[in-house]
Image 1 (cartoon, rainbow, N blue to C red):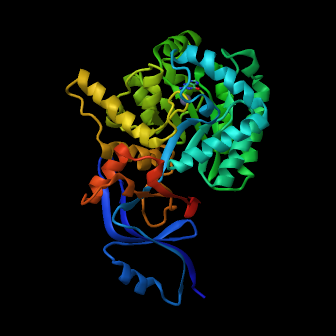
Image 2: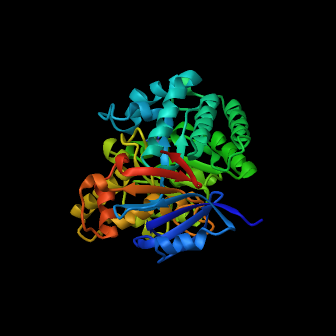
Image 3: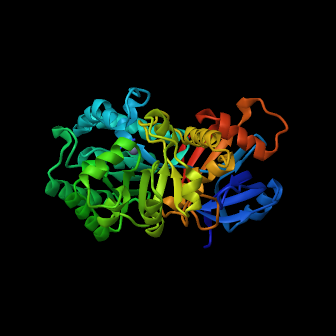
Length: 437
Ligand code: GUN
Ligand code: ZN
């Protein structure tokens, strides 16, 4: 027979398709069947909904009827987060990037050679980000394949959509984190195969050269070839800090600029996400745009590590795809709500020193956190908003604890972006599965 096992959501939906625009759908039903949105009925009241769907050919698994203090939004996308650094969140921001890595980050990452050490940290980071609405995360792990694979298995078990990266590095890091190039490439290929064999479309491997400071040309080129072989995603850091950029000039004197190092190694493409890009030159923007790569804006980190104020509007004006990242533990807050607020703050500070600059508003950062992140990850056809055929990745937001009356849905939503936290995220859905209660 034609019976469908469906979940039905009824109430207010808020999402966006284009940068700077939000769509508010009130009195709407979204029907989900096997991970995907199969129908959207706008302007349907609850009784109408029941008479339409409570028929013999429809099997309803669950009906979510939202109150007027509730609404559904697409799940947040954290397109740059370091799983192992979760432990260091809120510690050690007295140094800038290169010294910070040496003093705090590398000694911590060494510990992840032990899977037993890594496991509880990775459980905690997946649980915490999910609870805070991150339905998709792009994780940096460490160089240690076994621990990274454990992170992939934990994300699979907890049903987060996740890109998992085994980090590569073979220079300018402590001996205990310096890989032999051949072994690193072999480990990376095996890691990619191991993640693919988890056989879960939500869990994907991502090639993760830490940054060009820590990877020689040979390693970068070989990783470019691995990308071609497996057609997987790539993530790295670019142009975060001025001392880092100076170092790159010394390390790669024949390259035109930082971004060109990745370009020449065949690491730029539509599946490449580049964290930070605070100090990119116009030539670099051109390289990023023409390769259809993306930049992940990590405002909290850029402030904590004194890296600089990233001009997001300049990136967007140059037709570059932009997503948001928490960059835990360059940033200390694991929630994308915080990344949205910090993105607004940073843009306000740019405005204060340049009155011609138009600061970002809440609708614009919401785009970056959802549809923008999806597009940055080349997942714009699969997630990012509510459309028939897309996977249902969503947050059920409840604002009752804020003692608000008589606000329009758009105002309630704006309040959530500025004042909400995990207590307002009542349910999280990834590919139609309820992942927190
Ligand atoms: N650049 C290279 N490694 C890192 C890291 O772990 N965090 C940040 N913020 N930048 C980096
Ligand atoms: Zn980072």
